[in-house]
Image (cartoon, rainbow, N blue to C red; front, side, top):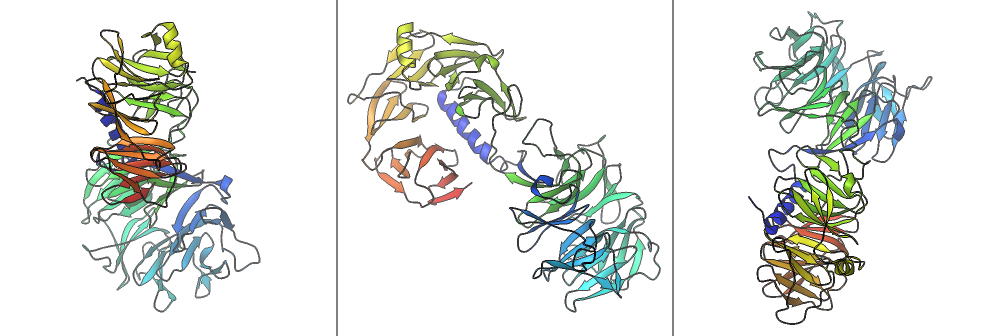
Length: 611
């Protein structure tokens, strides 16, 4: 189906809204921002086994050699120091935990310690004057439990004392407890039972009341690299190198995933954590697999060579979801990676002919064709093609060196382009060829395009192209004729307008101190609104679906003008004074670009949202 300019324009606005709010759609694949904290930022070692965000907002990072505290700007490292009994007991960090009393516990290879905030040092924890060496923990409403070799230790919040829990008949006496999890009963958090996972001897149920230990016989896995109980009480088990198995609460195998029968990215699963009804799965070499617990489909977050926007590494050993829903991934060799779902993604300049960025950092124009491909004009880098399905770019060397001011449809296979100081060109989307479109003689074309100003173009219908130059022109594709628009109510002085808005029947633009309206069908032009002296230094202009004009000034903020009544209203805010860009979306929001920020304005609520 042929699409008019208005339809293209609305599709573009929808694209902008989707680009910013792509996580709103249920079928959309989320985008993420990755923040890496590595040796370069001061991390003590690059293998991250555990993380914690404490109640003060500090990020604690446990590595193969040393403990680190990150305050959002710098890293401080802690180590075991010989002859200093207030230092860490060991440097290999198994876990970091914070209990309900705000105590921070650190499990190391040479003992358990607590952190002293007042003195910025540590106290080594002992039981019966002996160090204990747990490698796992679980917090409860009244205590925190630690898992060691075949036994549990319980720190009671009320008495603030440590006690040992061990079954009389203990078949896992010398087996390290690698994971602890509470066993829930329906909505209840606590049943008095804890699930114990041992790497070689499988999974066990420990009753805290009578201190009995019972093997979960229905789960016969060994060499377990990770286990997890999700919010629906399903038990997930990852035997090393064998993918992932899921058991019901009753112990029945209900799902089995591997790289051969599912979208799991790697069969070596090292850690799991649930977030928003999704199971995040850390793998050794396959990045992160994210399993939707509604439909059991996978998506993968992985490093792609050459793509600066992908996760930095593919070997992940630990995961932690903090209280702000920010996921942290500990890598095997590249430090800690913060993973945050984002609403805006910025694409930057990339080397020529690479698929993950622009051929030039400055974008001058955007156009979406009927197939959904975004065509991008750049300031000297020519034309770029962006495929929003796989988020890749294609550069066209035939157009390189050209400043593409404006893009529009010419035919099913060609775009028409306004090139700064050079004129109009036709671009073939199939083969990338770029050729001059002569609609004036050489003298007239030189006068119009070599004026030092930009000539903007827009396709109005199947036959007519609007050119905004020293005056508005209509170019008819079929007749090859150019028309100058006559004025309706008075002489309108228009000189290379740069702030304009298209819809199906009308074009509105800023000319001097006026809003001018072009009737696209009758091909006439008139002054619609004369602006008061308070609206000067206009930087941005748009029109919304509610028949309001929006004007942004360089130093006097944002204005709303009713197109019918001509009533002008200044939007009061202390957030900014200068506006650099404006657009409206199909949800009624006005997007406001300022010198250093982006805002969405909700007219119905008179409220700004910052991004």
